Structures are given as C-alpha cells and as structure tokens.
Image (cartoon, rainbow, N blue to C red; front, side):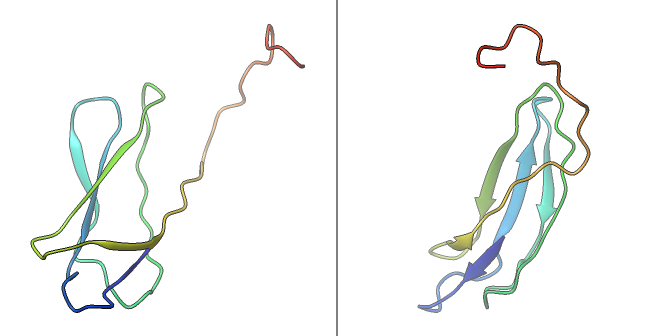
Length: 83
C-alpha cells in the first residue's frame, strides 16, 4: 500500500490488522506519505481480515492497498457450483 500527503495534514499513518481472533496488531507504523510503497503481513485465521488505518493528524490519504495471499492451503472444490 502507499499513502500520500498532498495538503500537509496526513502524517504518520499506522495500519492495524485484526484477523478473527479479536486481537489487533500494528502491521505498518508511521508509514511514509510520499507515495512510497510499504508492505506488511498478517496471518489470517478463521477466514476474516479487518484492517484499520489511524493517524493523529487530520486526514489519511491512501493511494492504494493490495491484499493478496502469501501462503495458502489448497481449497477443496467438491460441491462448488460451476466446477
């Protein structure tokens, strides 16, 4: 993901992940706001990933966010329509 600060009011965003366990973990802290790509990893359990982005400043400007699996177990296709 990448952040921007076009108006000078979007400093130091931090990304948190909650993965179905109720526990929140900081994945990226004090991210740069110059469009530089940053990355982090979260282990997802229970098939759920929630993210939260926070900053003490007035705004958060997200340029993009890309979420993709790193290590996944093969899923069963038995009983799925269209297979």
